[in-house]
Length: 302
Ligand SMILES: *[C@@H]1O[C@H](CO)[C@@H](O)[C@H](O)[C@H]1NC(C)=O
Ligand SMILES: *[C@@H]1O[C@H](CO)[C@@H](O)[C@H](O)[C@H]1NC(C)=O
Ligand SMILES: *[C@@H]1O[C@H](CO)[C@@H](O)[C@H](O)[C@H]1NC(C)=O
Image (cartoon, rainbow, N blue to C red; front, top):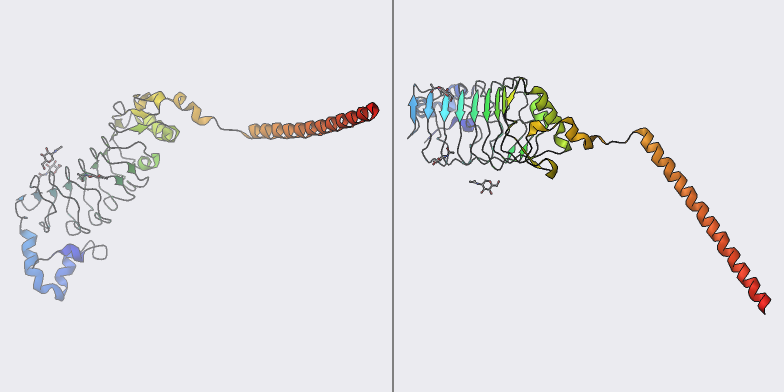
């Protein structure tokens, strides 16, 4: 029998899921098994001081069920993991570094980081994410570094994906499938120092203007690879580095109509309709006259 405290975890237990379990008499019987899980290193993995747990390159298809409770650095890199069970990290509130690089992940369970108050480094590169959903890193307020690079299917980053990550310094979104990124997604990242967005098929249309303007203004403070980031479309700017686009490039986006323009259009419309009514009227009269005249001349001929 194995005990998975994550099944008992979730929000209601966090952040004390594990002590809560020990105190509950119902679980006394399983505490012994649990206690061994507290100290033992997962099979095949290597551990140091029960704080650094290395399970990389083991061809794992799923995550090891139990980790030392003190785990600070956890590497699950270079495996074939397709999913993280909900609540998997609930008991490991000491976690600082989580390396999930080079797996087959396409999503993270909701609330995975509920108790990850110390998590500072998260590597999700070389996976199969297609979306960065809203609040994906919720509660991991201490995140400093997020690597989402080399997720070739990554098409969408939700405007609230990184909400609340005020300590985030490095964000890597390079080599994905992004054609658009809303400014809102980055605006709140006041601590951002480096941003990588190269190697994406950016569509430099009007909707991207706010982001590009922001990047231009921040380029001094915020090191970015925008030199490497190029527009894939529209054709006029294909291959152009994002930073090379100026306000001039977006001039066409600002051809908006003023009230005067609308009044003028309304006036022209009014005049045209009056003119057409008058023309019809004249045509009608003319036709009528011609008709009468021809009738009269016919009568004369008889
Ligand atoms: C934990 O991971 C970080 C970042 O990858 C690394 O710099 C640090 O040396 C690691 N700590 C140990 C004890 O291995
Ligand atoms: C990913 O992991 C596999 C082993 O599972 C390894 O052969 C490959 O080189 C790794 N790729 C990267 C980009 O690290
Ligand atoms: C990655 O996701 C795409 C769809 O989003 C799927 O077609 C593809 O098979 C996935 N690849 C892997 C290695 O899981």
